[in-house]
Length: 399
Ligand code: PLP
Ligand code: TYF
Image (cartoon, rainbow, N blue to C red; front, side, top):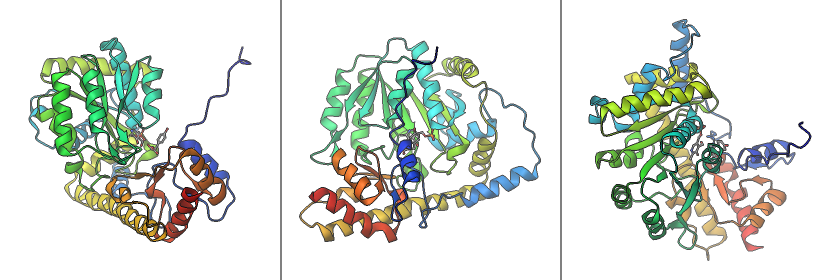
């Protein structure tokens, strides 16, 4: 019965962490997974999270089930973060929001909704993208295709290719867009390019599905990082959004996030929410309580909210700093090559352009663990390791 079950391939990103743990090299460096580390390369629990937890524990709350759509104060907080508190769409009751299992689970509920209610629609994902997008839509039986995104020659956005591919997409298709800090490239459209993409989606009747996994991590400013989805809504588009608190609140393992649909009218939003609940019921019944309480406590409390913004700027700032240090170290060691892309890219990652063979050399010879697409997570780098990493990169590129 089970003898023919084949071995599944490891996750290309989380598999890197497994390889890192297995390595005995004293100089090993884990630049694989996008999870924030402090300057000592240790995981961080934010101070606001500890304070929120203390408040929650002092209230001695029970462990009853949440409703299927999730914790009410969390749902409010999440939409406020996305659109800005007091946005007309919120007042008009045309936002459907369901708390789900972080970004991944929210994307999956969205994929299930697309499979059931947008039958036959193709989902367009960027080339490249976060690898799990393919699994999430593929496992729901939703057809997906790539649209062009990254131009290796300019180490920037292939805007022309992107527009051509979206123009050619059939009416009614879904377009997955990274809200900010594109994973893995760190390359985002400019505000003008976002406007052109929004107008094209409108003209061609494409449904934008924003994956917002790094709000606050791109610029350190929650509002600036929500520029794109807000622009689309304000230009009259209906959108789907998955939101995650894994990175910005550091709640990775608590699985905190939501799927949001911003529609033109209230009645369809109400009916869509009822269907999202129906889908979630069969997937996991209802979402977990603890992380949602933490996020709601932080966002809905003025003092904690301000403190959170400070801590977020601290995380984004540390990454920004090691970015600059890495670029300068590489420029000093290998001045003939243009390394300016490193500080042009934003978010947690830099897309180095290293080939798979060069990545293998980084890992096998230098014990630098990273994904084979050449992405490095700057969250796993500190000042003390910059020289070591720069030497490894230069040696790998030169050979
Ligand atoms: N989408 C993108 C682009 C990501 O990089 C990630 C990973 O952090 C996620 C979604 C989902 O992460 P999580 O399920 O932890 O919220
Ligand atoms: O790209 C990353 O590193 C993050 C973390 O299956 C992640 O998005 C990676 C793989 C995965 C889930 C989360």
